[in-house]
Each structure stands twice: as C-alpha cells, then as structure tokens.
Image (tube, rainbow, N blue to C red):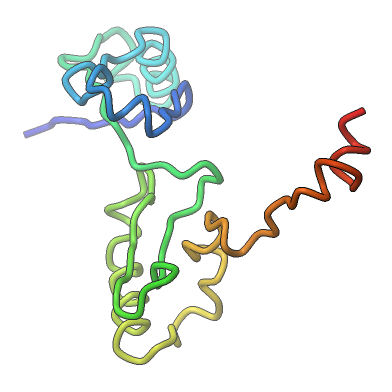
Length: 150
C-alpha cells in the first residue's frame, strides 16, 4: 500500500520502576517528541526525494523494554531452577526474536546455548545483588566506604 514506517532513535526517557507503578506513565500517556519526529523526517528526506516535503500522516510514541545497560536480559532467573527470561531487546525485539528464541530453547532444553558462543553478557545475574559484595557495617565505620566518603 506504499506505507513507510520509520523508527526514530534517541531522545528516550528511562522510567524507573516507581514511575511505572503509579500509572501516570502508562502507554496512553506516551506522546511523540516533535523535535525527534522532525529530525527523523529530515534524515529520511535526505535519502528519499518522495519524503522531502511531506509531514508524517501519523506520529506515535511507545514504551520500549530497555535495560539500563542497553543489552537484553536472557537466561535463567537467579535463584530459580526452571524459570527463564528473555526481554529488554529495545526496538530490536522483532529482529532478535528468532535468535533469542533459539538461544532460550537450547538453554532450557540442553542447559547451555550452543549456537552462540557466549550469552553470559545477557545474563539476568548482572542485575542481581546476590552477585555483588554488599557493604558491611565495617565498610561504613572504618573501612573503604568510610574512607572514600570523606
């Protein structure tokens, strides 16, 4: 039908969990940033003469599942035996879908992913406090944290 869909990147606001819970930032409140729409249109117009003088018929904004480090979360959920997660692929979810599905299927069925060399960079454990050394009382009273906070 001749429709062209353009996804603009940049200008994202990262919402923290408490900002999502209160309901003010639901999908119905996601509005496109006009300066981002204009930037995308100008960029596309430089590549195609058909868009050089047009404005978009529709401009939309959406919530995207993004992680704080920009990488997806894929793997066994820490502390569980049979719970896995694959999320946070940002705007690349459709592209990553088949690869993520295969990686997760191998991980679930075989206990490891064989077709990708290493998926540890995507591990949910990178966000887990259980993997990090938590400060002790000594750290606050006379140790390294107390020294570094002077």
